[in-house]
Length: 466
Length: 95
Image 1 (tube, rainbow over the protein chains, first blue to last red):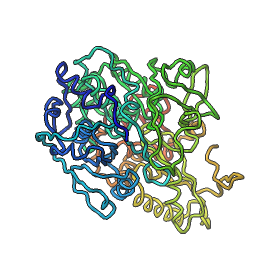
Image 2: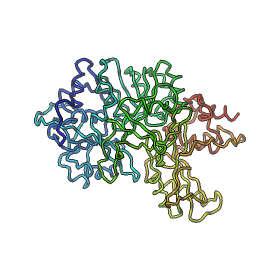
Image 3: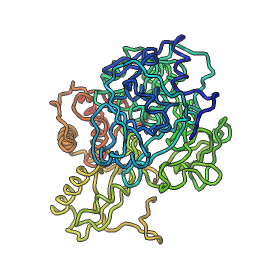
Image 4: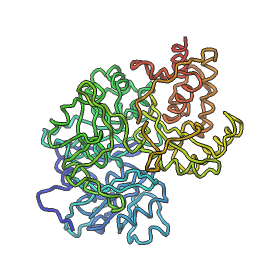
């Protein structure tokens, strides 16, 4: 058991150190939560102590209640699994199994044979109730994040509060005027960074809402006077297509999760001339590596050598990272080691050096990044290949000015019915229909091209990189 | 990923950009199961019923049919806010 030494503070303790000076709050479209109130009660129905030493799956629809659960459970639970809100219900049983979960906390009703091993279900309705007192054992809680895998079943990535907060400067004087917001959900690595940044430094945080229009979010962010805000380049492109973009006047804009191209950096500088604009490189597995603040796409080659606390190198074209901020392992051993023998995480992000500046040029494994959401080509190919007329398919990326990239498919049919024949169009529609039934919408190919052949390498595998 | 190749610039100028844009809005809305608002020039794109994934698909389809992607033509092209802006962006480039 990872019992905590007295020296490392839990998230609850970190928050309680700030409330007197800063009185921070969390706010969503529906709710506002004073952290002072949360610390004096419980959003888990006062049942937090029941979960001491447990492995807990946090399967919350509401982001704000999930945030409260993280604050209450860090240091108490042995392990917490942060399920993103769009997690398909059919994956829950395998997550429960892999996490050896003892408990599920949720704001919805969860049942089904796959969750039978779980001994406690705690229902949260967002109300604060008196807290219970019990076990005072403290644990170095494992924070388990989900990231997409090749088969669609998420991979479970293990962090600790220490690895997640390694890039956050908590030594600075607390600045109560800072109000953070993020387009991300806080259950994703990019959003979790902002949540923790706010919580560790006594700042308030305005949460996004997946089901509300971007214009409403911008209006809410503007009304709260948000000073610091983060999102993917795609989030920002969406924001700039709204007349509500002028409702916010941030001091600091942070981009992460996708390649920040020169176009989006220029646009943001134009619309928000008062803002410092930075783009960060971070991944769920490799943690936060570095920030670039010169307003130019890519990063200076000196960043590899001169980033404190993070060692970086380029090997076989891809960026490798070793630091105290990387995840420790995948929870399922079948996903293989997360680091190499020397402790480096291979990001599989390929770099190209031009004029002393590195530029990201895609992923070695062909993973496609659609607006910050990963798509494994194999997962889409497997669905396309189910169509009886399809011999083989290659799913690849196509650059896109709105979402950074889109998924497109090249398909070889068993029998060609002539160029652009009606039969082909019919098959095209059937393949798309199949994909829409089986896959999340960002994974469905935007276009399907019929081709005569696809290149296959000596290994018998499709050649993914041209 | 291969380096990005510029789209083929065989601009099909004979096609009326506006009518093709209207067709593609309808087509993508139907595929994405979105309810499309009436396409007037003053309509804000974010109120059109399409989400950013739909716009991404729309831009790709228009690149195939009109032969242009005005967003990528220039790093400083303005992001359109209304449907009228969107049409202008394409008409401006095709002219």
